[in-house]
Length: 274
Image (tube, rainbow, N blue to C red; front, side):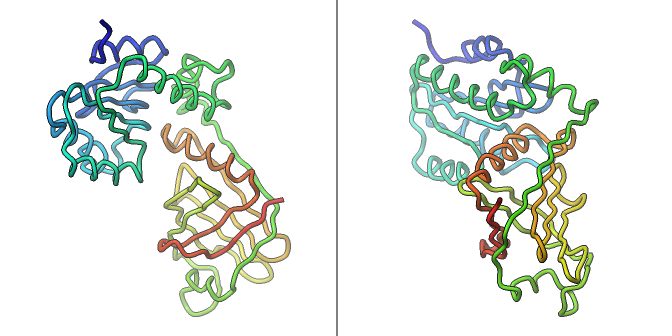
């Protein structure tokens, strides 16, 4: 009878077209390029404490520069996860795509992974001409050489209280400044977080830019006159998770509304995209 195991997951990953190996505490990881797991799996047949620690170590215990899997699964095989550990992983899942699967049947897990792989290929469709994992792997592997850039610019109308823009000022007035303010861009369910934006031009038009501070993402915003929003993703400076997040944001932005929010979640500017 078919069972979920390291060998089963290895064969499945190879069948999709991924490279397969180990990664940090994961039992199995699937890769599109070396050192950057797309999917990872921790299998646990006991109380889940081993898989829990492995999962926590990859996300909360590792340095920021360590690549974290786009999707991670803690697979309970015949055991049961401690309720406290489950609650902590649910908190982790609010930041990352982490799931606990309780004794899944191979067919059900295959269906779930079919869906996630299809979503990945669709989200990164601009990098895969034939819609396959194999072509996506070739494209991603060439990012450092080909340096692909995805750039969009939206005309928009802007709603904001001029007083809230004081967060970008250093001396009490809105003048160009070297001070970068951490903000997020929110469009529906999608977010681009950790954008360090500064005021680079003032006068009739206010121009804000993240410049090199938030790579692989570059954000440009103009307020006054005819407002506009510019976004650029420099793929060779990013990872798969960042690339997917950027593409998801473009889809959500297609609904027509983007908000600029501060670190506390308060809205600074609302943009109605044209």
